[in-house]
Image (cartoon, rainbow, N blue to C red):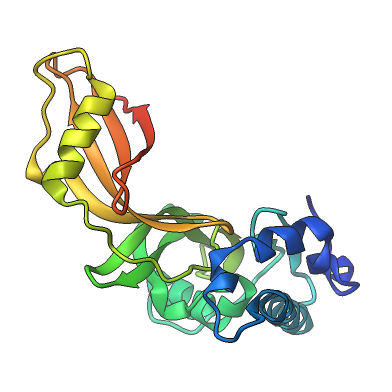
Length: 247
């Protein structure tokens, strides 16, 4: 769903679907205060509205695209900004931190992931992270991409970031997670393997849930079969399993 910013200001963020998604989110349930639900919905929506309005005031050509599955915009286009910084990476981090309220996140939870450079256009990818008792963990598939022109001006920002709720690291250990993942993929076959380095803690997050998981790489006996498996660190449940292309 694509909306110009002027539509946001009548309050596009307060659609029934948007409010229902936020009301079901543990981000709200874990907020301080007894009646946190409606108050947190209003606070998040109002903060995003204020940030969007400020962005439009500063950069009138900016156009924002909104999604019912995200708190903030999935894309900001029409930019041509000289962001302070001595590198594209620092510029991307600076812009994301300055406007973190637009996505309901903490700017300090973004980490540099990857930069793709070309003569006319370069893109910097920032990964969302979650502080936990096991350290700062990568949130899978929650990325902000800042694209710059050849002169180093920021022109586009795309994002699938979501607010995060506190999420404890569960009792399932690495060795148990590897066993669970192997059985889930190759329950009737022998020879499937994992190694200690093939399982790492990570986070999966949406507006409805934030979970710490084990991301396990399982390789079949014929070495051409490879699967990525996510195991819930709390319950040991297999959340997903998918084949991985081997190049």
